[in-house]
Image (tube, rainbow, N blue to C red):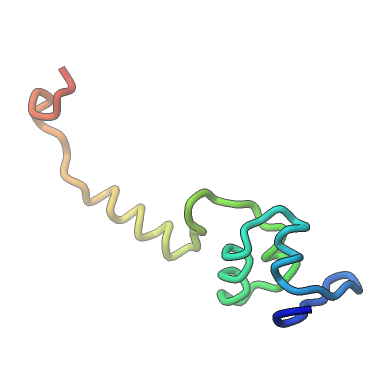
Length: 80
């Protein structure tokens, strides 16, 4: 076995094989583990799209949205 062994439910294998078995990108699992998640959560948490959003990311998106300038002239934005 190459790489660090990870054990889940009494089975031990490398992270790449766990990712293949759970049909999730290896990079996603590795990032989740680096963020402090346990192996089970890293493998089974739902995929959120192109990025994993934590509470700080959600707050940052929300802040950008509420501070965005309002559209005042529809014709400038080709929405007519």
